[in-house]
Length: 349
Image (tube, helix red, strand yellow):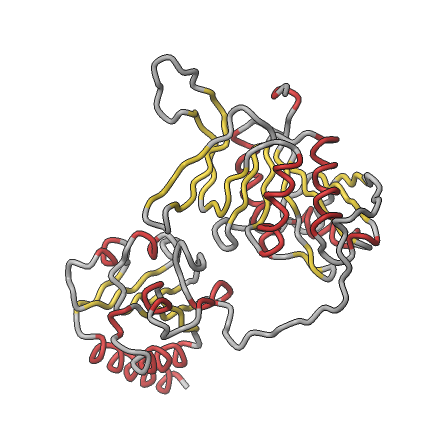
């Protein structure tokens, strides 16, 4: 493999029902940053689907300089084999140095299959991406390679953080968790170069047939979309005590979330979990109530604009990342805070 042939930062622009997934726009934002570090001029989005050209302008507004479109009826709905064939063919034809894929249900199925087909590595569920030297520190007798993609992800159940590189194969591939990277501010009216490419599709034994699509709606609010999160940990004490957090969230027009300990205890569903093994969030205001502040939880919320911690343990690690901290019994502090906010809001109205 001639590594010099591989150039540019590509992202897989996931779409479902001809609507771009948020992770595609987040990946474009990170791709722009990585491209700058590599002195690359273009970021390329790979768009697969049927009748999807109408999505090109939105990709351009969020940072795509070029969009490779594979448009075919076989790609109307996601199926493993045709999508794998399409993306692997794009890689073989255009030879990207880096390819980023969202760690969604689709991306987690597609990414490993594509990496295997083009004979390269894949780092899954990344929470941080950088360009740097590998090995990170010089090792006697081993060449230190420069401008490598350093892919950071939680390992061993979230108990440690690993930085991984793929120095000997291309493309360098990573799946990235939704909510980790930030979109750029859209550039209204931006246009991208459009490249139509279709490798052709020949059905084989791996082509599945979709008999029926059933769309399930969740009763749980999307915590990644919330501007205000009121999050509770094991220190809340019981599932019934989450009523205190729900009352506070209602006053603030916010959403309730929780830590892994709460999910493991069966108090709240997994969709509400913040942290390395849950969801990464960036709200404008984050309340950490009865949460000790283990590194696994902090990694999922430390980019919040303002963090307010309420905990009876003054030495709890959560206070190290909080902008404001209250040491006290949450059973007294939270109702008092809720009452005061109600009074303030009523006075304004």
